[in-house]
Length: 478
Image 1 (cartoon, rainbow, N blue to C red):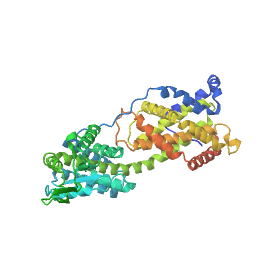
Image 2 (image 1 turned 60 degrees about the vertical axis):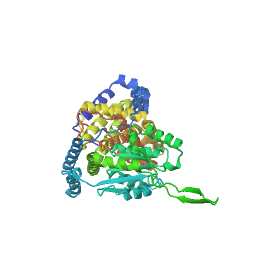
Image 3 (image 1 turned 90 degrees about the vertical axis):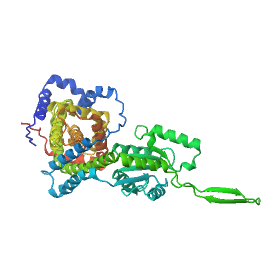
Image 4 (image 1 turned 135 degrees about the horizontal axis):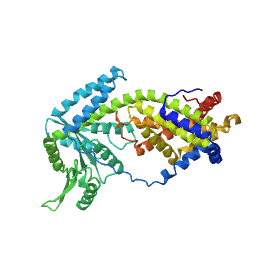
């Protein structure tokens, strides 16, 4: 298999490897690493990485408050994305996105507001909606009840979240202390610039001391997300109470009464927000709609780009296999693999309009190799490939077959991880920016989990053996 490449990193990397492989001194120094030199060399090179101090996990930080300017900027960036789709995506897929973008300026002039009432089952959503509608707070206010949260039906919960995000204000109901699953949803909605009121419903079922404790706990837990004055105790449908009255004849008369709903504080807060902060509510809705259009556009774009990127990954995985298979010095396969991964990163970056200099690509390729060691991917790959090869003829196992297949598989994992990583980035990356190691690590884990299935590994090894057995000549680079 003769491979002709005009790739500076690749040519230099494989060239250096070949030259070093000719040196007897270098050969003797690494000879004891044997057939597992690729894996051992990576492990040795990653020692400092594994010993580095771990940074603490960043806590979730609320996005800054929205302004009209920030929303306008978001719309402009989304328009740029949609325009950039023109050369790669059929016009029929772009027209609906353009229409949505063109409708966004009208959001700032909208007079009607939608308020979503959400929460888990049996927290009183329906009762609260009925009571608020009965108050006739204004012709411009519409109250909608979402499907219940925290159910086993994922589609229903997603509908609830989508309806909440599509509304201008959210009323989130709970009946007691906040569950972790409810807390996660609150953070998710708040991160999307969704204005929210947190209601402790059925407060009539608590003794005053108990209610005060629950309210204090809620205020403390969500203080970074929801101000204390927007955590409101209510009773949308208070329980009936028993009334006893002694009659003049000495008898006792008993009956039940339905107390009035306790929602006065909530009504006052809703009226204040809708009157004084309507612009901010509309900015939030416009921003979320903009992000929705942007996500749709990126999904279309990424599908087109992935179709272009996968052949690039396949090309480099077989180049890595051939280089590792033919190299006479096993331990130096690391150099060739790093060079191949660096050039692959540059080419994938070009597909995804991500700009990387040669030095950045080399640093990133080294980082990917170290992450693979840290996550145990290299060791698991070596065991899996070696296990599959035991069932084949010794002629296949001889030489650098294990190294060749391992290099191909690891290169594939690196390429697929970069595709997933790039698909989440903005269209144009700062030329001076580096890879986000934490995000890349997550993608590596995800891709490795998706590609370590037994059937996939068997098929990949069989394909690699076929390629290597048909071509035992060294890769030619010119």
